Amino acid sequence: MNDTLGNHLDLPAGWSLRPAEPTDLDSLVALRTADRTRFAGPGPVDPERVENEIVGLASWTRQQVVAVDEEKAIRAWASVHDRAAGRTMVHLYVDRTVPAAADLAATLYGWMRERARVIARMRGQHETQLDASPFAEDAEQRGWLADAGYRKVRTWLQMTRPVTSEEATSLPQPRPGVVVRPVDIHPNGLPVASDLRTVHRMLEESFADHFNSYRESFPEFVTRLREEPGHRWDHWRLATVDGEAAGALIASALKAGASGAEGAYVEYIGVSRSARGRGVAKALLHSVIEGTAARGGDRVGLEVDADSPTGADGLYTSMGWRTDYVTESWHQDITV
Image (cartoon, rainbow, N blue to C red):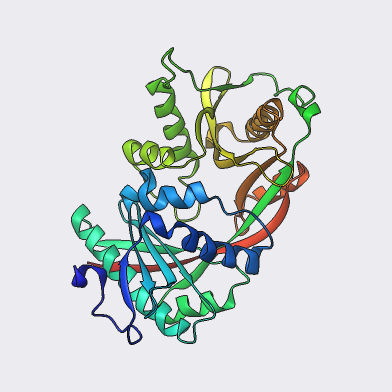
């Protein structure tokens, strides 16, 4: 067990690594909240989401440890997410008051690299890409990533748009020929499989020419999205142009904010290349705004590639979205 956890690595005297446990929830929420507050401003960290990563559905595709000091206090949390074949997400939260924070980060980034190799080997992959997402303002974390061999490859805007109750009925209608609808649901509450496959196909096709595109199998795609506590089938949308599939949008539910109202988060929006310029993206976005307003929600969040040549951030800004904070993608390619 010690070899699996990496306790043979260079930890401070009296420190050790162990698996994250349900009783660690408050400590892990505190670690994530400290980073969020320091680099993105005040904002809630959902304990349900953190708990889901430790022992819920999201834990099934993650390997993670906590670093505890000689007093058994949690000082760091490292998580390796087997997102898809050849893609591994890594997340590190370190108590910045620890004098040896940089050394601890180096040790845990080494542990995560070795765990990613094990995952790739189990999948039969010869290589995998490590993907970290630090806050753009977190110079310390960015330094740790550079020291660990990562390189910055992209910048992302985390945006939010307020929603008013009037928008449940007042938004513009789609252009002629464009139709947006929810995925069909069976009487038992489960979605129609053919619609889910169409959503998957639309997103795969629309992102084929985007930055760092890679194929994700349908089972991986659906399983990963269902891991999220905010997953809702009625937040999935399909768009057609003249009766042909043209785009899709997947949103999830956001917990109630300071106002007491819930919101929605756009996980994915994609439009097939053949349908671009027909107002499909705007129709899909209007649909999620309208649905959020109808449910009494007060906001819609999303992430946009600030470096994309498509200028998608301009569309979102023109529709009322504003940037709350900025994150980055740092990558490292490793072989097995």
